[in-house]
Image (cartoon, rainbow, N blue to C red):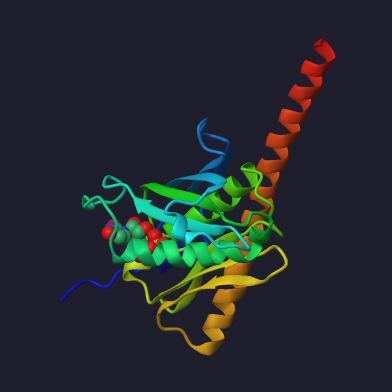
Length: 247
Ligand code: UDP
């Protein structure tokens, strides 16, 4: 018989976090010269990069919509991003993650400003440790803003899970793979939920607690996303002012 993993001991998780603590986050904006907008983001041991192109002409043409831009999202895991080498190319999981991530971001993108065009979002997972869809959505949201795409707001994403009958924030791989449940969400700063998925089992009370905790995670991430964008654009503004002063 397999030994049961103890995930939480004296209130502390396997990686030293408390149950309501998310992993450290690092966000860098404007990392790719050839993309219209880009972002590199780490959530614990997850490392993802998002690149946004557009609005631009749609190919193939028959996909274009007369009254709005279409949004495409491609989630891709590098073959070296996981413990056991992943076969390159799309699979069922990456199609699902691309679809739900696109749906998580689409409600805030003002697509009606750009009829007959496309906004392409590419997310590459360089290192995975559970929560790659949430990390990808967070990076994509910042990359969209960096590309100057008009949006109602940013989108922030985080998961809550259940391990050892306790609700925990931002599960890492062991907790996700061997725990009892995993519930990723995405939301606007105003609290509108744009993604809600769940694997495993929770009681109604537990799902309320998980939602509360995941929303707290999203709010913290939002503050971080907002700060890096403000820092980046105030730096650019200062640089432009200095250039103008020289001229
Ligand atoms: N994973 C893996 N190989 C795969 C797919 C997933 O090792 O082919 C790992 C990876 O660390 C991933 C985690 O399992 O982050 C959880 O995957 P899930 O499908 O729940 O998506 P995620 O939590 O990354 O959004």
